[in-house]
Image 1 (cartoon, rainbow, N blue to C red):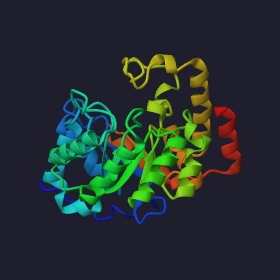
Image 2: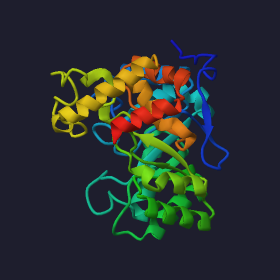
Image 3: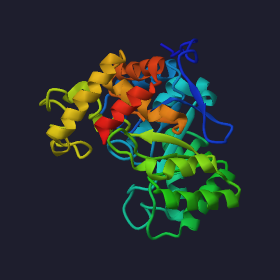
Image 4: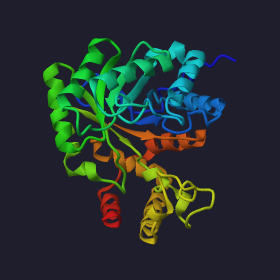
Length: 329
């Protein structure tokens, strides 16, 4: 059966301008980091993409190394794109990245011109695309000159392989330098993608202010702190949870009794607000409008529905913010 998108898909989503660009992003974006590789049933990935787009999520975030194995998320997305989404290509923002290990040898990692341009060529081939909407440098390279990395981003825009470029995981001072270099090259930095949640707030130490001053958007990844900011761990660590599985992204050592007590107190506030803790955590990241979009992962369509439901109650009173702050400090 041919997929036909929900005709009311744009009615439930909020779209927010990305920095001082002409581009708007949905308040909620879908990351294809997990659950789209070869270890996931293709039909499950397809259902997640259908539900996301039917809910107005137009921004799909990938990277060269997403899977597992690396590259498989782009390949599987490319297949679903060909089979279901080609009529909607111009309604989608598709992003990819390069910066982590992708292939063997000295040219398959970090931030050289050689690696970044080769990686994007491979990503385009895997997805069956002529261009991506956003191409990011995924992490700073301590050895390659920043000018070389930014010139590579400028080049792929001039080649027509990306419409916009961004950076991810850059600390504030280095981000400011990268943004200035790109501005001087004539290819502005559209967006920065940092890790940001109630439990990881380093971006508040200057980065968000720099992005606002320079007119650059932001999209927060891991806004639920790897699942900590959900109702999954209110009563401890379930045997079938990510924290119990030995995952490198969340382990039992992170879930101290002190941390779990904070989760329970935050959950009590969420319940008073009439929403789930995960919904409140997403809304909190979007508070104050310094963050353009929150990037969620999903293994079930119900998780996408929950995130969309957050939009019905995403604002806080001053008293609520003060109460949350007292818990987090």
